[in-house]
Figure 1 (cartoon, one colour):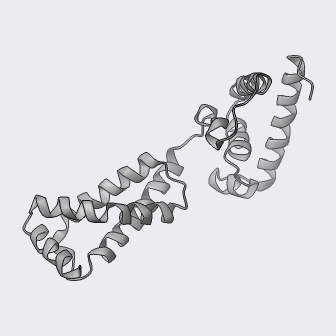
Figure 2 (spheres, one colour):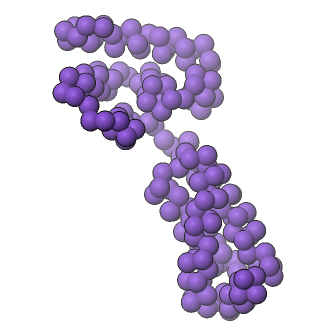
Amino acid sequence: MNFMRDRLVEKLKKHDEKALSQIIEQQSRFVASVIYNTSKGSLSKEDIEEVTADVFVTLWNNAEKVQEGKLKGYLCSIAKTRALNKIKSLKNTAVLNIDDYDPEDDFSIALDAEKKDIHRELREVITEIPLPDREILIRYYYYNQTVSQIAAEMKMNLETVKSKLRRTREKIKKKLIERSYTI
């Protein structure tokens, strides 16, 4: 198998597109699993596909750097670097949105009408909460991040995050009671 890979790499170095196609076919799953494992499951399927494509573009543009018998290692190295870069870019630009979370994504059994109603009402109340309080709440309850993780990612003091979370819960409770829900 290494002999076949080495021949493909030699063809790739001569800019043979068929060789690239074969390498992609043979190595896509491997590259995607490296990206998934590096991201610890934090990247979406679309992000993993995008990073995988970036890995093969990098391979194409830098084929001459691949040493004999080192294709998998080279792909692994690129995949890890690209995955970490993607995670970093998402952390720098992402503001979590309540609409991105759907309780049915958790593969729960269909919610009954009352639960759907309270969820819809809760969503509405949460969208009225100003940032950064809303983001802290979403990160904590919907994305299951710890207070420490939230403080680190949002570059805030741990105690500030705790107090904002407590005050936001109180505001939500008050608004739901005003809307005739018993808490």
